[in-house]
Structures are given as C-alpha cells and as structure tokens.
Amino acid sequence: MEKIQQVKTWMLDHLFALKIGLAVLGIGLIFSGLVFARSSAVSEEIPSLAADSTLFDEDSSEEKSRKEDAEIPNEKLVVDVKGAVLNPGVYSVKEEMRLIDAIELAGGFLTEA
Image (tube, rainbow, N blue to C red):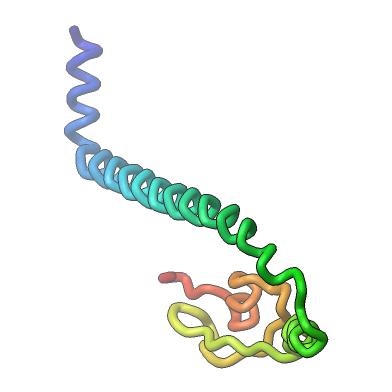
C-alpha cells in the first residue's frame, strides 16, 4: 500500500513532465503516420506511370536529343537558407547534397533551433 502511495505522489510531482512527454509521443505518432501514408500513396502511383511508359518507346531523333539535354545535370545549384542558422543566406550546393549539408554551410543550427 505504501508503494502505491509513493507512485501516486511521484506521478503528481511529475504530472507536467508526463503530460509533455505524452503530447510529444502523440505528435510523433501522428507525424509518422502521415509520412507513412504519404509514402504509401506515392509508391502506389509509380507502377501505373511505368505501365504507360510503353507509349514513348519510339522517339524521334529530335526527341532523343532533347531528353539527353535534359539529363545533363545543372552545374550550379543555389539554395536560400533561412531561419535559426548561424549565417542565413544563399549558398551554392552540389546536386548530391542534402538539406543538412546546406545547414552546415550556413554555420549550423542556433542553440534555440
């Protein structure tokens, strides 16, 4: 009986922290569900698009030339990094870079980020 009273007292003393923890957990679960639902919807669309690709098998030489030009990657990409970073601004990035790389170019996150 004493152990139960100790647990009740501990929970009342830490009620705010428990509520915050449960709220964060709930938000995380909702976000995960949305991401999963979006990725499922995208993966379902891909096969239907691939089935229609047979319509474009016989390209003219002009169309092939345009496709080859479109496949040449851009040599210079720029991003505008804003928000809670040390040095917000416009930065040149490579095509294979990710968001975190651009944030690091901007000096990284501020402590309040």
